[in-house]
Image (cartoon, rainbow, N blue to C red):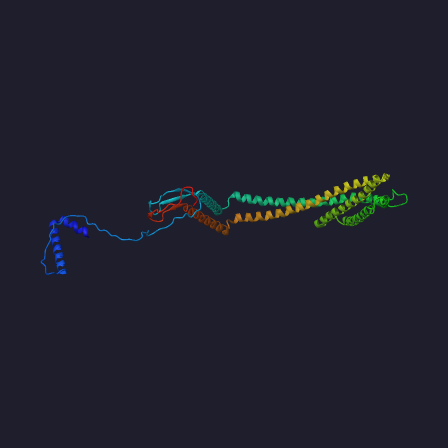
Length: 397
């Protein structure tokens, strides 16, 4: 306001002179009123001049910023650039420092890829079933049905083969059992009608008291094998190849166990005779020639039982394998049937909604990654001056 008046005074000198006189007179008048004395009033006149008006204010105290903040990055990574120095003036949004955003950029790329994948899945669900998908589903169903049919045929053959192998067992096992009985309970060694099993034991018990244990093991093993064999043979004769699958499978398993018991009896008899030969040889005593004949017979019986055991075990495993194949084929048929029905009926509403939800989730994840990426650039929050820079390039924020 004062400057405006002064400008007018300069432009209008006459008016200015009058104003100055008025102001001067007013001042003298006021001063006279304040300092009323009996002395004579004196006036001092001076010419009006143009000068600069200077106003100053002085005081003491502390100077502080009206708004101050410490800038701290939200990410704990290395600083790759410091864009300011102490004392530098900045505007709101100016870059103060840049952090290493390699991982953050990768997170954005991954989120973008995930989002694109989710969108493609949604588009695929929204599209109607194509002819190729329908044909493939039908082919899968037909293949599963063929697999089941083949497995059922193989299972029937496995049962038939198993019954045939059981029959083959009982063509040779009677010879094995008869031969084993003759080896143990024949009287072709002793001249006094003593069983062979007792002859072998009595001939060596004076040298080694373990002879009795070998003899008893052979006797018990044979009796157990005989029990299994008699029961098994009776069941076999009562079973037809046209019996139900469970009966034939049980017969195969029973024959396998019987053959194992016979093999154990052969092994025990062989142990007795071999112990007889070894003990007499150690004492330079002569062994009966028949003992070697018995060992040779037992060796052939062992080969026979081992062959039968392998065959019967193969039958058992084959039946189990084909039965498992049927179960697997049935599951495939069910899955293929459901898949074909789903293709024909179109996209399930719940699947479609789930796919849309996935897209939304991936979009949110991308936004989060982008927001986090922004944290790797430190910016000035408002206009001001950088008071102090306490970090340098390559420091860990």
